[in-house]
Length: 151
Image 1: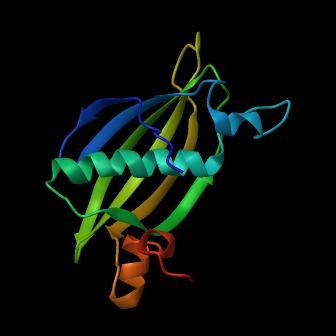
Image 2 (image 1 turned 135 degrees about the vertical axis):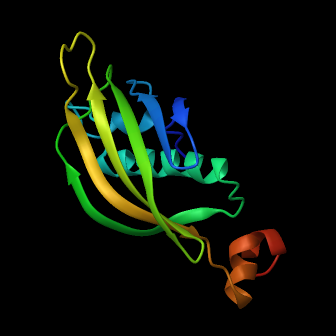
């Protein structure tokens, strides 16, 4: 299942990107998270940062699929309820053997809020190319049902 957590790219370059995600009660994952107190799941705040980082990767000409290789220092500071937006900013901090390292911050944009928006989440993470090899590659690319082979 794929969730698009970038509604709009506000800025992008080969070094950074800023994106926006409007959180709506129409999002299916809010129906159960949490009953009576819907909030954007924390892992989706991280995923919003990852998707913003993929914008940077595409701007740099990266074409290989990228996955999370490492997450460090991830901190959650605020809940993000429906009716608010999440503004994500990521910066490239390094590259190594096809991997891209980033630091990111997600801020809570609340309707009517005056002043500096509160930080909802921060962290550092690395995206690396998806590694697929040998028999596992065949299974990953083409699952048994699609090959008419019983698992």
